Length: 300
Image (cartoon, rainbow, N blue to C red; front, side, top):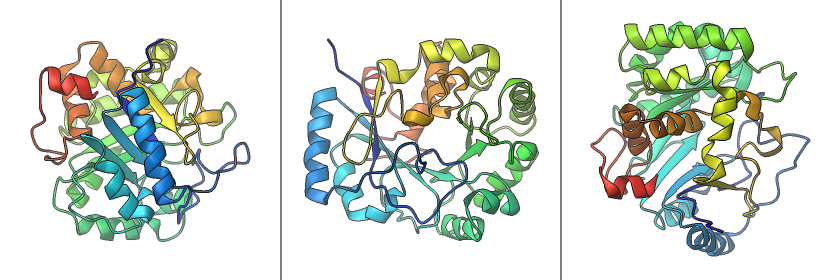
């Protein structure tokens, strides 16, 4: 059986300064295990890389920047890296990785979801980064979906490359989940924004269309976690069916990376370019030209 999975998603730490209301990571369903020490983590990381042929690493948590020294050592093991951060920890400018900073709405909405002061702290830290050296990640929830029209203002004020939008992947009955008719309405709004404010959304129009509820079954069947990606917790236990583990809801997947891969696999060249930018080679940064051809496709 072929175990090759070119994309690895790693929980670098179970620690985080925030406790976001819509976070899948901290739940009563599956308590977060204690972190490995640096030596133990790197040993298991190399084993996972070699076992699955991982070329692109996505560093999440917890808050991966809390273990910055380990993060640097870990990224050196892969040709392509991306980091997801809440933005409440200052971000070094020399990481050589794609950077996604989570902003889920205007100050009052973001702070209601993530904690008082989280918005202003993230904005201050992003102001220290070079323009277009990072992207924004916005998870649309029942609380934030009404603020789609605000997203162009967010990109302009942060000088970000653009926004990667996803929908909250909650279990049925989750009050923050956006699905059904309201989700399809939100897709219409995103498509209008894509047309009227070019460069705000990083997804292509084809990818945005795939967020519609009628495509959920198709997306679940072709999900990258079936044959292209593997996700590990802090102790390198594989998370099934995906990074969201027990909190996954495959009947209404809203993961932006899964959607981008589905669009790319359907022949969407813009989604191919997006994925190359999100996982830059170590000598490039997000926003710079990515490699193309066979070398690029091997990584993703």
